[in-house]
Image (cartoon, rainbow, N blue to C red; front, side, top):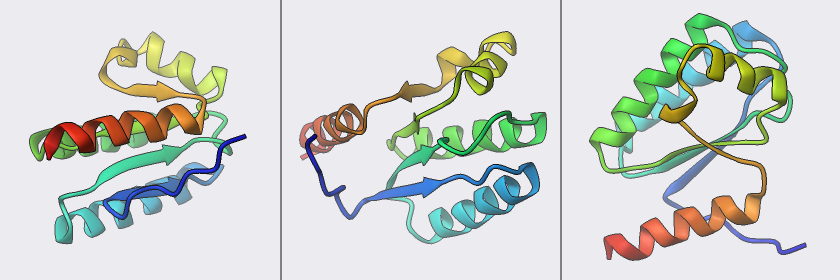
Length: 116
């Protein structure tokens, strides 16, 4: 297994398993990004079983913010049930889902290289 160090302009957040905690984590992330908008974001869904509509709304806002700043939002390790929620809501195409951290690293590295 390859071990990559993410560039310093990448924020990696491991989301919690409970909805109220996820909302707080997303709020903190938005506050961080308001100070430092030149970062890509990787959200690790390893502990998330399902996601509610409020958190999906926050993710759409986050995606829009990052996209407007030319940055990426990548969802990592999204479980089948949680991913189905995005599919049923018609939102799966709005987000980037990756299971392998090596693929996440390559996608970010590729994006970083093309911006230079």
